[in-house]
Amino acid sequence: MLAALLAQLEATQWHTPAALAENQARQLNAVAEHHKRHTPSFAGRLKASGVSTLNNLERLRHVEPLSRRDAQALGDRFFAAQVPNRHLPLGTAKTSGSTGEPVTVRKTAINRLFWSAYTIRDHLWNDRSFANRMSSIRANVSKYVDAKDWGAPVRNLFSTGEAQGIPITTDIREQLRLLRKFRPELLIIYPNNLAAFATIWEKEGFDLTSLRHVKTIGETVHAELRERIKKITGCSIEDNYSSQEAGTIAIQCKASGLYHIMSEALIVEVVDEQGERCREGEIGRVLVSDLQNLATPLIRYDIGDYAEVGPPCSCGRGLPTLKRILGRERNLVRLPNGSRNWPLVGFHSFDTVAPVRQYQLIQTSLEEIEFRIVTDQEITRDQEQGLIKIVQQALNYPFRITMVQFRERMPVGANGKFEEFVCRVP
Image (cartoon, rainbow, N blue to C red; front, side, top):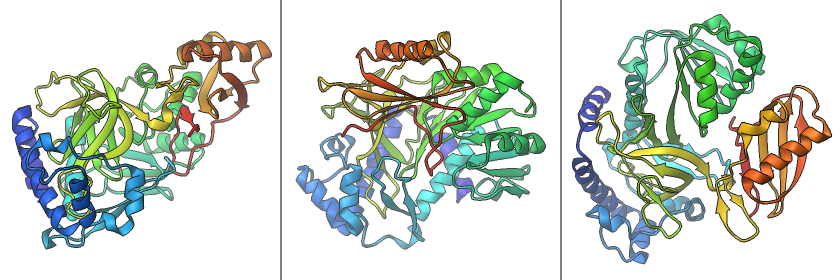
């Protein structure tokens, strides 16, 4: 089944946008009709939105988005009472809860099949040799592992090189020691962990010369990190966009750097504050509709992320694109006048004042920000004021900023993730 699906995806990626949309409409109608019969809460959602059926994509726009809080409030009523046997067995996916609003989703065997296919698609699009050695540093690795192959799903179809798993909680220098010993060609890693490596490599030199591919997961990748890693290692970051709830959402294209949406299994909308769909170059909230999940009606699910709509890709694939994934609503700065915007904090200028190795800004009120930095040595009062001035000018508001200095890398959450700007203002 996996081989057959991969062959199908190899063809559908070249379909025209119109052909892809036509297939999405058929799938949307089928999944909606299933949930109308077997998920009363979804039938109620449709009725409340004034929609009787979802037999075309235009009608989808009239369905009110489903928030994380909505999904939480439904409890077990979120799930279908009946799922076809061919979609069994069911599994459960839980979000990390880093938003403060953890959500549980039931997923089917078909969801897992598409996840497997998209995992392999990601490797194929980036020309990664399965014979290579792979290292993975992530939160779901509980203890150090040396393995004879890459594991499922790749080993189900291909012979692979050896693999290494390193817990994210391992000391950074110990991680590097283990990587040097293993000599991977492929490294799978969170961006914040990769940034910590970059800081060491910039000071002490890059010696992981076996490295050919750097795949980032789980967090937003900023242009500054891409530039650093390219300069240090010669490798371009290969990113993808995914979530526990929806699986693989988009894979970065090697040809253009755009993110191709996995339209064979998902409808991804980017909408503005009024709920209207954004045009190319515009930024808005990401809504996801899962076209395969007959266990949970993940229809117009507001995943909590913001993204920029991309243009058609130069590679020729018909799959629509996102240009950038920017982060979550909690990453927006809030101003006293009620406006919100993406926080440009002026980090490119930090090194003109002090050698900042890592930074994080936490907005604690409409007027106050805690500015956390990691430096090799304690900065002076003048340097502190210089950094604060850069941030105030970049944010275009005279926030009261309190500086907190760290000697080592800042702590990350239990999910291993790190965000450079967090707004805690409700």
